Length: 500
Ligand code: BGC
Image (cartoon, rainbow, N blue to C red):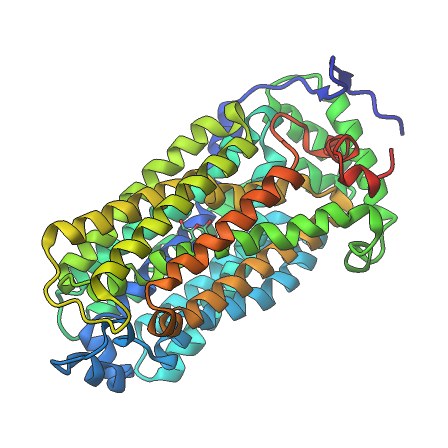
């Protein structure tokens, strides 16, 4: 079937459609899928510093920490079992995103979200009522399975639902929910840590609330027209698209969706297909964007902010408060990207954010290095000094929150053609999880060995990833999602792989 979209001056198509209330509300509800991911990121770091939690499940870490004269601050929290608690979830998410790719393609994006919510709910209950380490670990595996499903389906859902001119802003709703989840978790940790003995149960069990939101949300959300067409429901898709776009004339867009779906039907093995030469740019982005997102080192701050702030000389209350401050910066700066992403474009944000993160990482390394030296003995840390460090950490978090944070999810979800979309998205999720796992797992050990050089390590990657973006990532702003091939065809490097 020929595609008859309206072609504008530069060869790009324009579909009629506006930002309807219907699509806005739908996208807000779906984006709430990010809450569970964010809540978990924020909660785990704080819980692992709570005395009662450590005493019950990780007594050796507790003993080590309580010793008055810990000679080396860098190594205070270095414990494999404690980090395994945090990072086991990411391994589970990695496995389930592969299953989720199948479910998302065969049964639609909604079912994946529903499964994600239910699994996460089960994990939260098990964790809240845990009486033994195995319950904690099984609970975390369930949470991870849940996140694998939602992180696979929500970004795709948002990118497919949104009118292309607002795709960036609506998709970043997902990242905004992640940051709100992190912030809520940090605030709750602050209060629950004061309930001695069982405050950690509230922190971990509280994950039930965001889980219920996305579970109920997924039941009331419509499926995307792309996904309906993928499953042969043409009439339904057309009616739905009219409602979503708020116009009667959706023929062009529907035609293009059908063309994309026909092409997609010819593909029997989406995984094997991904290895074809013409998908090289997609595969490269599916692997490198999430890996680079994690190599910014953001989760060192997100998981371990309270630990990190205690390490550099804050008391445990002050440490949690500082984590709340960075959480606020994270939410605020994400709003900036919602405003700017469809105006300034993705590349600008990637490059500006990268530069700002590089500068702040070097500054943090220098500030910590100057005080702690290589033996980790700071003496008394003056208050102003600690404030300067927190300030640079905030500048760094802000940069991440308007660049690699949201774009790390947005860009992959908008560049894959339908025939490989689910499979490629699950590579993105898996890579994100593998690198989150690696960094979560080795961070405390790296801090102990690389000391302040840890920040230089991440700064190095900032340079590499910015060069990559500059040369290899084309601008995708304002291009309809099923028209993305034009972007690769006109790229100086990728055009060699994607035939005209
Ligand atoms: C990343 C997470 C990170 C969060 C911080 C997300 O985009 O995938 O790993 O913790 O942003 O806001």
